[in-house]
Length: 305
Image 1: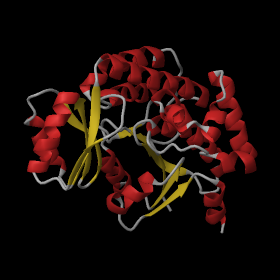
Image 2 (image 1 turned 90 degrees about the horizontal axis):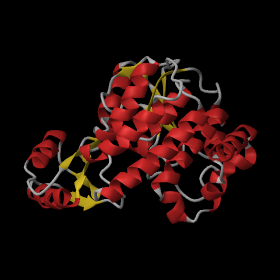
Image 3 (image 1 turned 45 degrees about the vertical axis):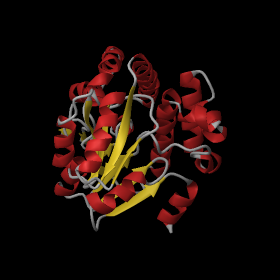
Image 4 (image 1 turned 180 degrees about the horizontal axis):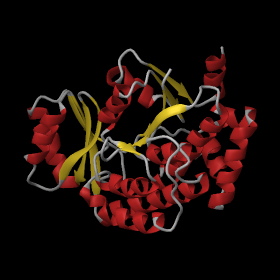
């Protein structure tokens, strides 16, 4: 079987995340301890006990998601065999590169903590938001975004056929909601986010992240990681560094990324981290192909059963 590892992004966090893994798996407990030591505060306590609004804050949600994904990765070990490819949705692309050995967990943790802080600060400096659209194709969304005149609005996440997220300033997204409904969207709703992620409005955050990533070591990945920004295989550390920055201002080409993996012969996906968002999307993106979410102890017990 040809295995791909996939890693979730922001929005999948929840209070209590990875708690059963920490309690039952020493490898996971070690990851939690290293995260707390690296960041200098009890990220593990926030993950396990909340409060929810603090955990959801971008600066905390991103390192929490990375930590949960890496804990699950360490618990998985080599039980599923060697992966051929990996990919992650937005923040999850950092998790994928940790899995591939492109950068260390500690460096990735510092990077995503800063990434979250920069994204929030950029959103505060210029207010932005995002909206989910259901029932419009990719080209239809692009066309509707191009008709916006009140502000900025661009496609941000191409998640699956008929499920696209857009991003922009408040006036642009508000106009887009009306245009999308007129164009036949079944649903068009604003999301509760702190900025216009994956849009040109994130350029200040991209500049700050670029400066940080230039100071840490990137190795060539042990297996290719699919870039969110290009939906192409990343095989060098230099590419990885540049594309992780570019990702902040580019749409997440997720459905296309999964298509690249299935075209390469992947016939089994394992989603490592909280929830099962990506496995659910795979019902459309990778029809008929096994996609197994592994985030808590009971998931691993079912895998072994």
